[in-house]
Image (cartoon, rainbow, N blue to C red; front, side, top):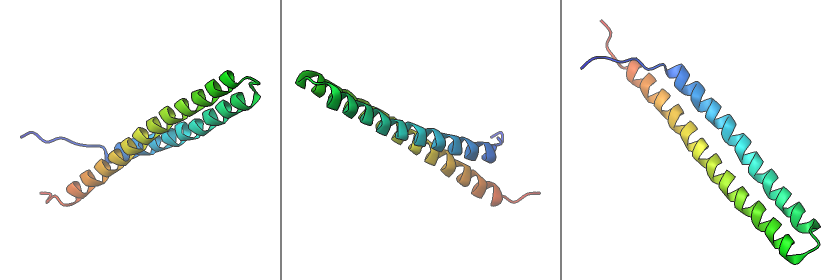
Length: 94
């Protein structure tokens, strides 16, 4: 079987970048929820108030779910980098 090389530093860097994006998306989820609450509180009409609250809640949930996917991808990239490093370190070189 032909050999292959993995750049573990790049994998780990990708994990770090995914983590940063996950944090940003997670923060945005909270901001969107706050915007929905502001719409709800300032609407002056029960239907518009409910719509604002529903909008904020729906987008918060969606963005929070996306942030979690990004966090998991970051963890997977970091774990892969570590696993490849361990494998490489355990090889007998001739």
